[in-house]
Image (cartoon, rainbow, N blue to C red):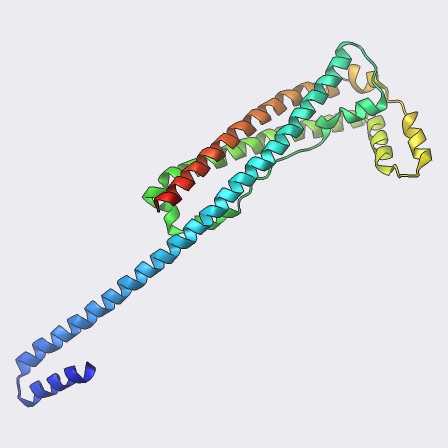
Length: 259
């Protein structure tokens, strides 16, 4: 084909048909440009197709993250509900002026343990780098993702608030030593071995001053009442977050089915 066009050019030059040669040369340049543009268009289409395929594949990671978030939160929700039940047990004992054993006190003081939820973010980080993330047809999903992130931040703020309350209480109670018996009992529990009869005997006979630790201890009672209130708020936010995740997953699946 190249030899064919070369022969035409040589014939025109030989016959001194400059004007026709010039038109031919321009036509040939145009054909080359068209060929380049077509090649670029095909290449761009291939690139777009590859990017779309990668983007849709990464959306599957987002779905997996949402499902894992739900699993993690349902488990954590059960733990926090158990904490509320244990908190109520302590508060009812104080109200009825009951005296609890060291084991009952220790096992029902779980609100003092830090708990937190961390979002699974691998899929979202993958799709952020794609141009398709800012596309118009992706806008409904993008809005739901942003809302999902905002509620997650609300969860982190509530958890931080609760954990800081625990820390403040521990500092306050460490000053007067009212929490030392609880710590000592906890250390004994951690040191119990299968054949450590001495420590086991010590645990059986250990007495925690319930009145000093709870009944006559406003900082501790305040922590339990405030902790219960915040924990209920955290659980409600967990439920809302799970609901948003399910809506987001349905939106993503609908997007993938359309494409």
